[in-house]
Length: 202
Length: 203
Image (cartoon, rainbow over all chains, first blue to last red; front, top):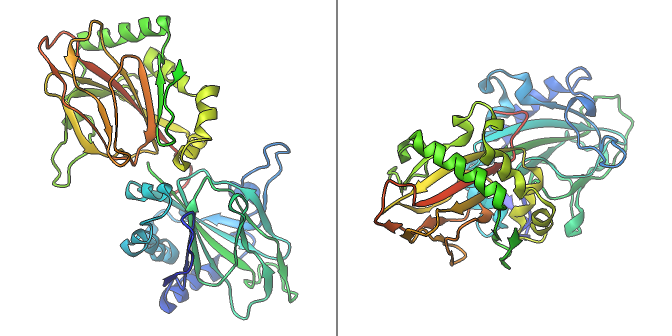
């Protein structure tokens, strides 16, 4: 686990989960990667274009908290408590003041998103305090794109396996379109996964 | 109503309520006092010190809990006046935490009353933005009750009909109030409004 960003506005942490943690995350992602589980944007609370009303994302997704009545039944909902470990909170020192809210945050929601050919998420903001994005894919990598752009900062954060990105939720962010470099069946599991945590004070 | 601060870290709005709003405000405050509804600190979810001790001394009540319907309270309704164009336009030029103001979907309102020796030691609030509205009965019968914002190193003087807004993670305290005529509603009122961005999913 290593911080690889220098900005005060966002944090990039590489090699976030251990080998064991990744194995258990993949067991659950494989179980979920079907069309009746990962659902279209209208069913997973997408941001909308304020003028046209059009959904800003094209991907498949699921709020894990809606699936499980008990957190301990989910590998991911347990393993991702690491997001709120002291080790990560310590990295917030010296960041923008919005990261200070971490000391009072007490609630979060976990969204699994899966991107295949031509999927994207146009520029939008989230209605939470902090947004955590964790990225992963199955090797060998069969897609290009899926990078994160922070338009106001004119910064791009390249998609990378096992990478965590944290920023204040009001910050505009977008995901560039995915291009599969090898033809795959829908829900092949060879696309881009993003596990998002929205963090709140409740 | 007039914004009188230049800082990017906090906002001061003076003459927040107009004459007729003030009339409703005082009717409600006097009614609440006459019903003796204000509670000691242990009942109003105050911030605690590192050792778990209560660090405020005043009396208060969450108006959201006291009223069954929000419509019953002039204060709860009038307070939403902070969502006006002038203040909103200013939010976008303030420090980044004020950006959350545009996502606020929940709030809690705490009425506090300070008399002799009452105070609130340095603390942060478990919210996104904190609004404090101050008022008292003229002629002023107390001294003290000023607000210190510790990280910024600034003191904001207690003033009648003043609203102060700042990010809740800022450490802040209220200096002790001193007065002689206690028990007559002549002390320092502070109506705190805590702003939240509430989740629709999650645990």
